[in-house]
Length: 239
Figure 1 (cartoon, helix red, strand yellow):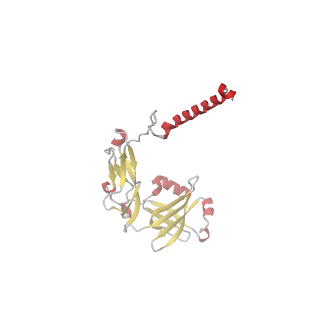
Figure 2 (cartoon, helix red, strand yellow; figure 1 turned 90 degrees about the horizontal axis):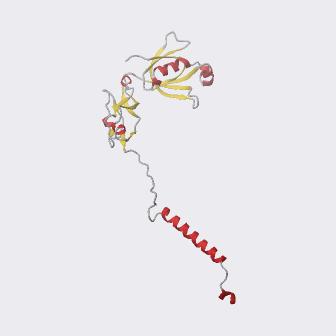
Figure 3 (cartoon, one colour; figure 1 turned 45 degrees about the vertical axis):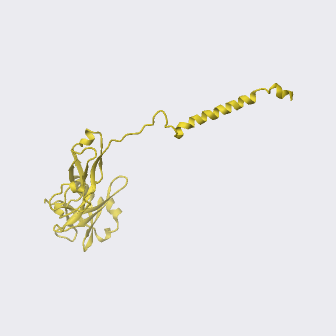
């Protein structure tokens, strides 16, 4: 495995807890967490970090060798880490903070790996169905040097009604899946048909009798008005 390096600097005591000042100075505050080890507060020059992220597609699930330097260090320490979390600004997506987990290259770890489909789905292209992806990532256990970038699934032969389960995935050697084997990853559903009501409402339905009632009420009202407008009969007048 080729080592991927990223330079970082130890935050001085006066800089800890002053993230806004660091950001104004064009640094991104970072923290390295280690199992049974002291947490280390670092800072990385913003331009260097952005360039690294672009070059390595965000660095997710990637083993990174942090070269940690400081004012009192003659030689930078090297730490194998993976990115635990990246905090970004909710409006402009600016990187605000990065958390790293220090790892051992000889100890198995659990990580989440993305799942991607490949090929043109027959059930969609030829039958007009809808491809549904139920699982977008899956948790696996392996050595840090064996973490897959992603798991690719061939969906080209899927027809309407077909499904791909977790147990159908092709897993690299040395990687164990920590997920229900029967869970569905992809499925092809029937095409969606919009129900259009007919011109005539079903007999007995509210839509069928309502116009009849309105017409009947209107007719009764009109007859009543006409009756009121008629002169009295002679027989009644005589009385």
